[in-house]
View 1 (tube, helix red, strand yellow):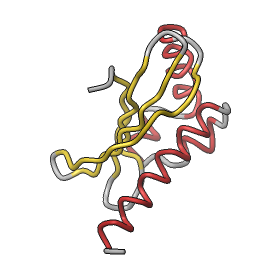
View 2 (cartoon, helix red, strand yellow; view 1 turned 120 degrees about the horizontal axis):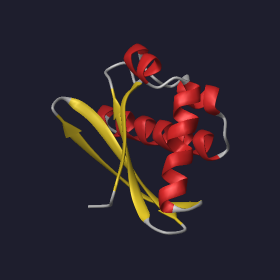
View 3 (cartoon, rainbow, N blue to C red; view 1 turned 135 degrees about the horizontal axis):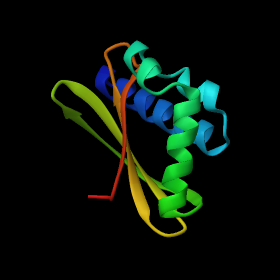
View 4 (cartoon, helix red, strand yellow; view 1 turned 30 degrees about the vertical axis):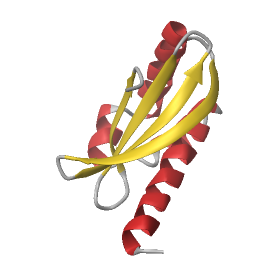
Length: 110
């Protein structure tokens, strides 16, 4: 396994772990994966509020549906496909060089 493959596998695992923590309401554990900037912008309580808003709009979370990766402006990004009762969404998790989450976005799938 190449170093790049191992790195992507690590980031994919971290993104899936983050989703599992969010969907099981483990807000503090999920927020512990954030870098300093994200921790300030989205502390655990704000993460919980954001998730509740997403579920209010898209319906109850049902399952993870897939994963893809890309590099965007030098940042490694993992897109985790998700299925909610009313709509599918992609969770974009942006990682810094230290494997901390530095960005998070939910969008319609591409």
